[in-house]
Length: 299
Ligand SMILES: [Zn+2]
Figure 1 (cartoon, rainbow, N blue to C red):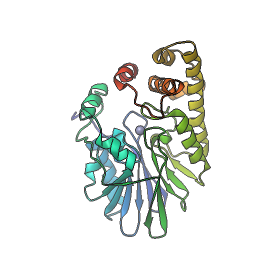
Figure 2: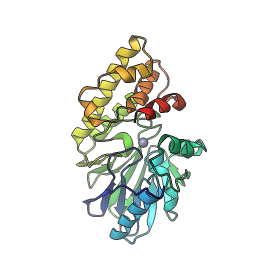
Figure 3: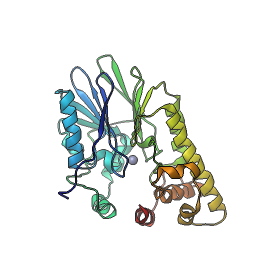
């Protein structure tokens, strides 16, 4: 563990006082954000481990000494919440559904992740339930800046919130958008994710901050939607032939999206597509112990 160093992240000012912390592509290497107002700052998402969050906090301190009033969790996946406790002065906000999921987290979740990702550090990773919730929409004002938190319901996860700055035309997408790598819908819903991507594309936005990947444009939202169409159509052919979800994951041709790598994610995405073909409810719980070992054996 002492060998582990946080990956070198890119730190970008997108508009005066609005920053993105962009980590290189990789499992558990998410992006985060900082929005600085006159009285205090808002952070979008925490990170996986102590070295990562300390590197992010160092960047924050280089640009502001204002207190961090709020930390927003876009969703409940570990890379976005495991270091919430490194922002003790902040009120941590998420959707009401996301807090329910956080509260129900398996107490062994982090131990399990350590087994699946032996090269990743989970130093001081912890699941800390959020302090404040909202339904559908919450607006935080920083003087004349509007910071809109919009809960889009299930998509990438069981509840995904975006953070939209209409004046600056910037949106922090959480993991609804991943640019240059495949989606992961193990706990989400493919057809609702496609609707959420349509909503993201409809916003008056110049810069999309994905949960993973570089600063993106509207076209990247369409590309992600196209990936999901291919996954769903190809999975459907396998489903109709009576193949299992893992046979589908090993068989289907995702064409140009092969270049993205991370093809192990097809196990999760095919399992999710199969659940939807069987008519199960959106974001129905899948058996992670059936899917994850196959997926992580391939990574
Ligand atoms: Zn996620």
